[in-house]
Amino acid sequence: DRMGAFDRDVTAWWAGLTFPLTLGQIFASLCTHVGVTPATTTFLNSTHSYTAAPFASNTLTGRAMLKYIAEAACAIARFTRAGELELDWFGAVSYASPEAGIVTGGITLAEYEVAAIDKLQTQAETTDLGVVIGTGSNAYVLLASPLIVGETDAEIRAFATPIYTRLTAFAAFTPINAKVKSDWSLQSGDIIDIIYEGNTYSLPIYTQSVAW
Image 1 (cartoon, rainbow, N blue to C red):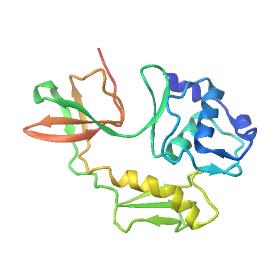
Image 2 (image 1 turned 135 degrees about the vertical axis):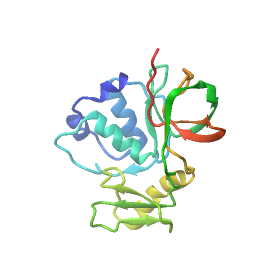
Image 3 (image 1 turned 90 degrees about the horizontal axis):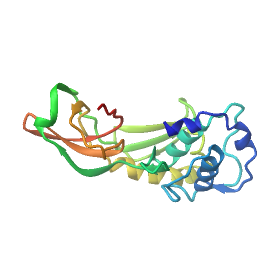
């Protein structure tokens, strides 16, 4: 698993960076430090600039730092089949699993639907009201995100608004755990159609495993 390259201490690397830097530059520098080639050069919030290090850490791993970057970019960090790291987002692909493709007994549908997100709240801590974008009832909370910071409400709001826009475009869905005759081209982040008992379910792939 190429993601293992990030399972190392990067505390000294982080402390040694010279600011100002953009989020995109931090991502590129991290990839260089751990020996990974980035496939992505621009992404959501990649041009956001930090005049100084947004946080300090005495024990920072590469995997944690990549998580922080992906969170600030509202993205999935995954490796391409060429072995390069990309920051991408969910997207529909041309694939539909026919009912005959489902292994007998290999599907479980949740008894609920995950509602669409209609509000975003960023908080430094649980007791902090933070910045709220949107007026809905199903909020996505970014709690103590070390890269989503700012001195003023306006600064944090400018950072969080693109994240809100991306999250609210994500449709409601029924969670499914399915064992199917799959397509080797599928990967986490794809949105596929699962056909079961005459119904079509639009399913975002969060995790998958392949057996052969």
